[in-house]
Amino acid sequence: MHTIIMHAPLANRMRHAVLLFVLSMMLLGSIVWAHPAQATEGAAKLPVALPIQPADSSSIMGWLSDNPAFSRLVDALETTGLDMMLDTEGPFTLFAPTNEAFDALPADLEEQQLADLLRNHIVAGKLTAEQLASAGTVKAVSGHSLTVSGDQVAGASIVEADIQTANGVIFAIDQVITGGR
Image (cartoon, rainbow, N blue to C red; front, top):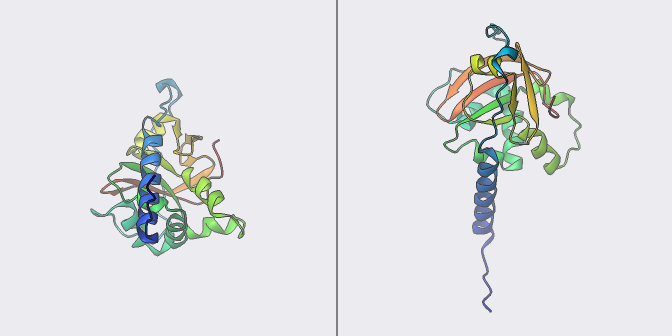
């Protein structure tokens, strides 16, 4: 029997690659569309309440990193390793809580609890505000179904919509989504 010894940096990269693969597999087929009769009429116009930089050809993580209003989200994504997923081709829809949204969370969250919470904010596929309004419900990579109604998703208000990036779309929200509703 052979023993394989890996250096720590290589082992970490392999662990992240396996995590990325598993998460990618979880994403396949995770969008749930509501019946058209349940759709909200028209997409609501949303006010711009944040100093948001215009989107460009960068990834979701690149865009978040360039916008100070999301520094706590960037830190959380990097801590949990979910940043690697949002730096891939995607496409993804991200409901991005602002820095202020994180104030309501307990300070002593463990890394796994934080990762579980953040998975509630990621949806496979690139969905516009118009598509969300007609969907009624979307399924996050956490497996939770998120209700979309007017300018809200799972009870969080959307403060900026349809921020286009190279690998998806971002919706800035005012709360951390703690579970499906």
